[in-house]
Amino acid sequence: MTHTDIADTEKAGARPGDGGPKKVFVKTYGCQMNVYDSQRMSDALAADGYVPTETLEEADLVLLNTCHIREKAAEKVYSELGRIRKLKDERARDGRETVIGVAGCVAQAEGEEIIARAPVVDIVIGPQTYHRLPDAVRKARAGGKVVETDYALEDKFERLPQLHKGEVRRRGVTAFLTVQEGCDKFCTFCVVPYTRGAEVSRPVSQIVAEAERLAEAGVREITLLGQNVNAWHGEGPDGRQWGLGELLFRLAEIPGIARLRYTTSHPRDMDDALIAAHRDLDALMPYLHLPVQTGSDTILKAMNRRHTAADYLRLVDRIRAARPDIALSGDFIVGFPGESDADFEATMQIVRDVTFVQAFSFKYSPRPGTPGAEMGDQVAEAVKDERLQCLQALLTTQQRAFADTLVGRRTDVLIEKPGRAPGQWAGRSPWLMPVILDEKPGEIGDIVDVRITRTGTNSLFAVTA
Image 1: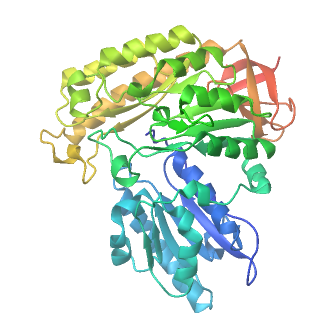
Image 2: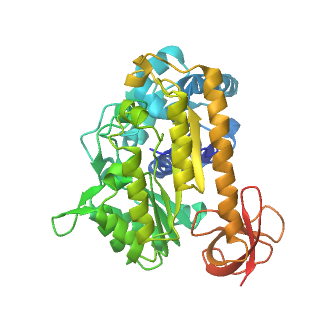
Image 3: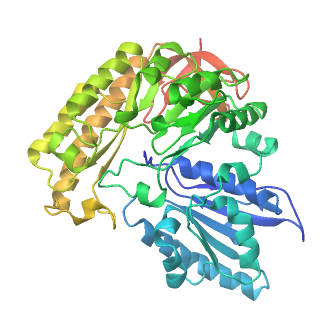
C-alpha cells in the first residue's frame, strides 16, 4: 500500500449524548486508509455522544490511530503515550475521566503488549474491529481493559452507522471511500498482510450506497482506497464478480460525483478493463499511483513483487497509450538487503525511463516478522542515505519539469477551500496538484476552468480562464 507523508490529522465524532457531550480527540498517523478509518470511528462514536475536539487537553477520549509502516512506528506511539499519561493524571486530579485508546496497525501488531508496556492505555483495537469501538469505550469507562485485535467474522462496514451529512459537509467536497482491505501479495518488506489480513472486497451495493450518501452531502470527488485497490473484485447486483473498472463506471453515474480516483495499485492487478476505464471514463482523473519499488529484477524477486522491470515498463506503455496525458506516481525503497550499486542504478534508470510527477521514496528499514528483516547482506546506513539523496534529486527534477510544462495551459480545478492568504482559494488539478487562485472563481465544490500562470515549491498558481 502507498504510505504517503500525510501530516498527522485530527478527526472526531459528533452529537452530545447521555450525561452531556463528551469530547474525543483522534490523532491519525500514516496513510489515506487510516484517515478514512479515523473518520468512520468518529462516526461510530457519535451515537454515544462524542463530539470532536482538536484540543487534546479537553478530550474525554483520546484515540491514536496508528500506522506500522514507518521505522520505529511502535516506539513513536509509546513516546506519545508517555505524554498523554501526564495529561490523564492531571485530569484525574481534577476529577475528570480520560479513556485512552490505541487503534490501527500498531494495535494489531502489538496487541496486549501495548497495555503491558503502557498501562495508561484502556483500549487496543485493530483495523478490522473498529466497528466495536463504542462497546469497547463503554467497557473501559466501567473499569475494564479491552483488547480487540481478532479478525472479525462480521462485516464491519455493515455494522458502522450511516454517514452523517453534517459531518461529511464539515470534512469537505472530497472524500475517501475504502472498497478493499488486506493484502495477499506478501512482499518481503511489508507488514500489511499481518496487520490488515487477507484481501477482502466490499460488495458493489455497499460501495454505491456509501458513495450516494457522500454525494448527497455535497462531495464532488471520491478516492477509492485499498491496500491493493485494483485487486478489488466485489459482488455486483447481478451476482457477478465485478472488477474495479466496472465499479468506476457505476460510481460515475451517481449525480454530483464529478471526479474519481483510486489508490494504491499493484502492477500485477492492472487489467484491461481498468486500463480501458482510463481511456473512456471522463470522471476518472489522469493520475495513477503505481508503485514499482525498485528497477532491479534481482531485488524485485527478493521483494517477492512477482513482476520484472520490463513488465512494469510494458504496463506503463499500455496505460499511456490509453490515456496519453496520465501522470504517474510511485513508491521506491532503496537499500533493500543485497542491493548493489548496479541494482540501484537500475532503479535510477527506470525512473528516467518512466518519469514520475510524484513519488514516495524511503530507505529500507526492517519490520519485525517480515522475511526482509531476516535477510543477510543488509546495506549500510551511509550507503542508503547516499542512494536516497540521489534518487530524490532525480524525482524532484522530474516533478518540477512536469509542473513547468503546465504553465500557460488551461485545465479544470475543483475548488476545495479558502487558501492560506486572504482572498486566496485552493483546489486540485486533475493531476492531484494543489492549485492556488488569488481570486474567488466560484463556490467551494465548483469545477472551474483556469490557466496556470506559474509554479511554486509544491503548488501551481492560476487565474480563471
